[in-house]
Image 1: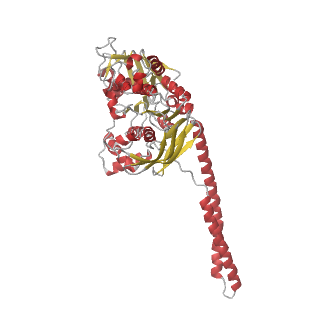
Image 2: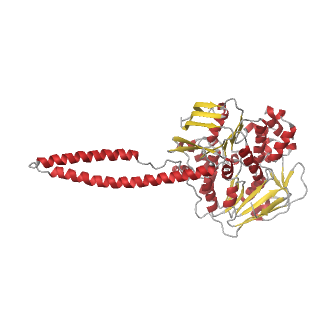
Image 3: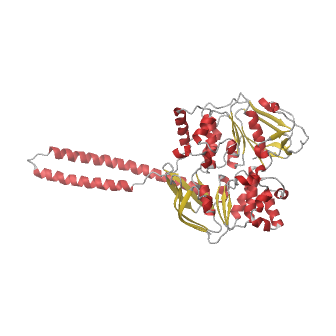
Length: 549
């Protein structure tokens, strides 16, 4: 059991509160989903609950965290930078329980996660794995620890659909308490029986935490109905109050006029009006008290306001991509983004010209997939799915490299690893100035700040180094750059990862309404169903169009 009592968390830098007075108990069998918008402190809270030393450099806290001798297992959103250089076995072996675990038990876990056992004991490094493969290895290490409480930060990030379904079953059937962050609405709907909602109100100056014993969909519907009801009552009471005020004002003004016009020869009339004025003053005091008791308009965290500018479409039928590869290989520099196309030069794909590949496996390279054919026209929106390690990210990076050289279309690329495009040392304002190739004039920076404000960045966050931002804030920064630069072809690797599930419908509507073409990799089932016109599955044999995602 994990118990939190009267917990408050503050940024050391500006003492801005992230959490105030939070109390809850995570019992055995509780599946508590931690939700909230990007940058609200969800990951910070999870780290603090696991080990306060992980956050002591940038936050301070008051309150009690009781673990009652339970063993907590923590899954970080991203492995530490130094872990990328370790072999998988070195990384796993740092957990003593892994070395003590029975081989057959490890084999069962590996089978459920879809990890070949030989991969665990090979020379492959963590940095060479796909995002989904890294999450699986992290889960493997976590399971070997046999925790009593699971603290999971975006465990659904980048993992394939089959593993997502395994993760859903694991969380749902886990006999222990699970506190987890996830952007995946489908997973939340199928697993959560308790909600912890973190909000930042009044321009992130006042935190609000809501703990509810309910499923995710039940909570969302209940919250929406409650807010609508409160808003309706507040509107009705305000209208009724306004009518009362108008009636009172008429009475007040009449008594004042009569008092001014009363004759000195009529003292009894003056005394009567004085009594009337006392009555009017009493009514005024009653109205003031009534105003203080009226239903207030609901205070909620403001939603992001964001859309792609009009006029960024692409003509129907225009060739965006005509790609043919006989094989796709990857080399030792996979973690650096180096890819090979089976005996195919760069010019073969330029401007959508189909090329041919070699069936021979170049020395030192690993074949990811066989024949790949992908044709995209006009404003088509396509999604590529497949098991982790199938080569989806490698293929998407290759497509991005080729399309970015085109002059007849305006292409933007959003990688799975944001560091490929974002300079961690720049502020969001400086990044957008560079990204847009602007001069950085006062008018330009003012415009950038206005757009960042619509994406719920505070004034301070606009000037913070990007490394201090959450994953969702980094994703919003890339999307904003794409929009402001008037791109009409988007190449997106897991575009909805790291976004709050409450922002999910907004983001999906954004992509659905985008008038250009989208080529994406995603395992987000709602994104696939609502946004994509065509779905392709990638495996060792190649790329295949499927009718049912």
